[in-house]
Image (cartoon, rainbow, N blue to C red):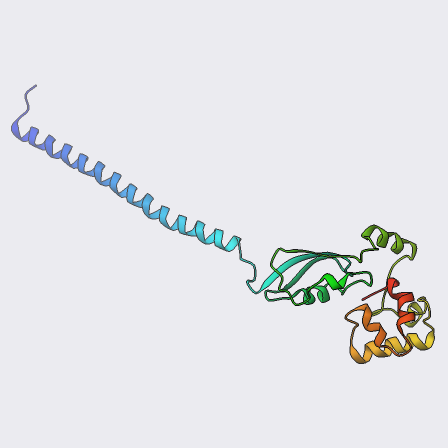
Length: 197
């Protein structure tokens, strides 16, 4: 079959237009994929940032245990000292070896602090004594009746303890109980192992 010059020329034009159209479509689809991929990646990064909020840079978390009223995690300011951590944990127990502690030392985030017992008292012995006496009496929250369960504490002295904490605020340590009138060293020695703050 013979084709004329015009027919061949027409075929060349058709093939050329089809080829240009194919290459143009491929280029456009590639650009669309690149454009759509870019914001997706940005969105993923933003989502990850939002899903992992950082901790407050002004706060630390430490764990305290041993001869302390309330062992466990403590949340404190970043510049907190050991004395502040102990106060936030309810204060030292009467059998704590406070002479080995530097209350002014700074604490670090994630630190584990163990408050030692006095040499002649172990945590096992303390727990055994605690079971025998049921539980320690919190001198910051105890009623007059509860305070009278302590040795050498009668109605009058119990009233003075309550008046003291109402006037001065909560006891910071059990040793502060000695500031209450009628509670001297002998009375304190009898009840110090039965109280907490």
